[in-house]
Length: 177
Image (cartoon, rainbow, N blue to C red; front, side, top):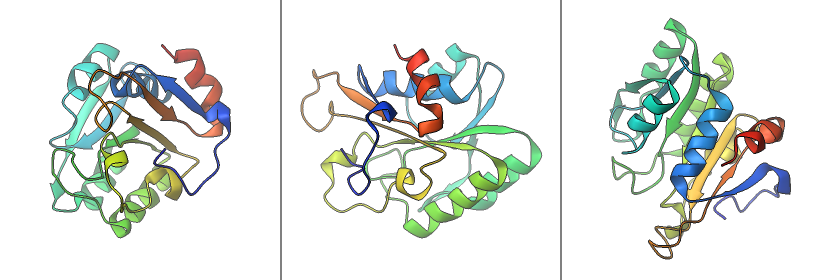
């Protein structure tokens, strides 16, 4: 697991049929049809069709070389109710960068201020030996951490997992595929 510095309660970890299934459960757990989810302006390739299928509104936020701009996230949250921030902050996401710890902390502060859940997709994380603290470590009460073994072990191996805050464990298990 990439969340290695923190012990997890077994009920907060759900084994899934890969990353997309974990994404689906995470989105269904924190958002309802019509709710707004924000993400990078260029994001995960399956997020757009998945959000449409679930009836979620999806908005891309401006980015720089360090990921989502905090001022763009703050503006989105100030103008409307945002249910979740979905991002790929580590390594080989669409931007091919790793978000700094300082930027992660800024986004966590905004998420806490506006009561926004953070869905962190870390499919490439297991391949990297040096990583900043994941959002799951910085904001355990509002993180949903998604990863899989598909990219790092074998493309045919459809095993992923989702880590949810303890308070959302029952809701996520009810939506688990």
